[in-house]
Amino acid sequence: MFRKVLIANRGEIAVRIIRACREIGIPTVAIYSQADANSLHVRLATEAYCIGPASSAKSYLSIPAIISAAIVSGADAIHPGYGFMSERADFAEICAKHGIKFIGPTAEAMRKMGDKATARQTMIDNNVPVTPGTGILKTPEEVKEFANRVGYPIILKATAGGGGKGMRICRSDDDVETNMNLCQSEAQNFFGNPDVYAEKYLENPRHIEVQILADQYGNVVHLGERDCSIQRRHQKLLEEAPSPAIDEATRKEMGAAAVRAAKAINYESAGTCEFLLDHDGKWYFMEMNTRIQVEHCVTEMISNIDLVREQIMIASGEKLDFTQDEIMLRGHAIECRINAENPEKDFMPNPGTITGYVTPGGFGVRVDSHAYQDYAIPPYYDSMIGKLICWGRTRNEARRRMYRALKEYVITGVETTIPFHQEIIEDPVFMSGNFNTGFIEDFYKRTGKDKK
Ligand code: MV4
Image 1 (cartoon, rainbow, N blue to C red):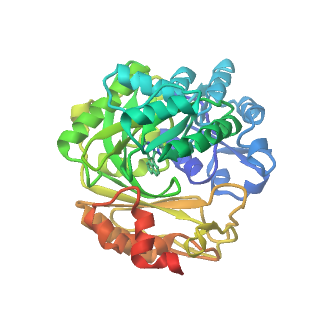
Image 2: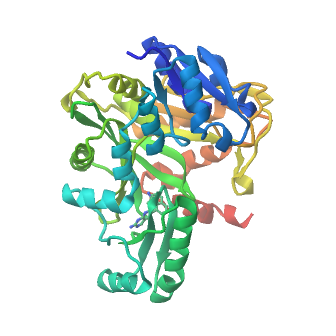
Image 3: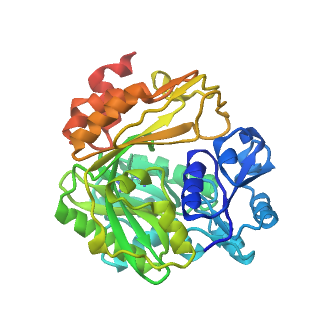
């Protein structure tokens, strides 16, 4: 097992990883920016190093600063969490060069999934369904030819993109003329790679993702799916497991497809295959996230498997100690992301000092957060200050428990998404389980909130 693990992250996920390390018995190293000196992860870790100023580029994204802290502290492994260095193949390689184990997949596996056109081809080769689409296209004419074949709408995607960035929908030849150049130059500017490809566009699909775990010896299991359809501008707000739209037969097929995808690239660690589910029940692979995700907790709640612990065990060379048949998914879990944002003001970030803080508790309730009373939320990073996760034997029980826990959760001094979540949890369409990625837009229309 590792001597010491450095956590190259901040906020709730840094706290989450420190907790897993402490349970295994591994000392931890926190790194923090000058803006995060009072952050909870700094206090919870065995030791902590300030690695730079507030700017992420000069702290949590600075490879020399992170590697130096690892060397100085004697850490022999780095957990990147999500965001920041988590999907940086170059960083994983530099860790290896310094004899530090990157707790995650290999640089090679990250690169194979990081390029979306390559990932699509890998899926096609492994009999995983993908939307009708193309390889890299260079001209609007090539795109129009594809659209002619499959019909509009189509979507242009940056091959180096992902998570909803660098995408443009086209509903006509004219749109293609306008969007092709825009998409290519955005791709160049955001990702340093202008390559773009096209797919048939699915209107308002459900976003379903399958969690997998893979060890270094080719053992791969899936832990069922999460439904992440409740999003706003590609920011997930609420996630649940299992998906109300997936039956046992589909779960098995999607799970098997995700396992094939992982095996095809010799994947190791925790990973997630993202699928879109169309209105006719057909599903398609979209992309693979090669990191632990924010919403991993709903899977933990229904599987009773600590995914971060598994990541650490796998990275240290342990074999998975359970088989697919031994994984039992029980009950239902819902997660609400608690952001310091004002839903009344277009979810504007609302940093400031938390003047009062009381967390909910009780049976089936979990709070993952770095917040505490008098904590000053720095304005430099994302606005998520915690996650509230509730388990129930049924979806309705989890939902009612969530409503109760949201009512108990008191955060004063900053506006948060708590009141907004209360409305979603009680919404009849949400209650029905019959919704898709158009939910939030539709919710505003139905409730008349968009006219405020
Ligand atoms: C799509 C799509 C419709 N058709 N691809 C957004 C995130 C990225 N992983 C893929 N995304 C989409 N790709 C085709 N061919 C619609 C989306 C999409 C979406 C997907 C999941 C959750 C929310 C979404 C919101 C808008 C668009």
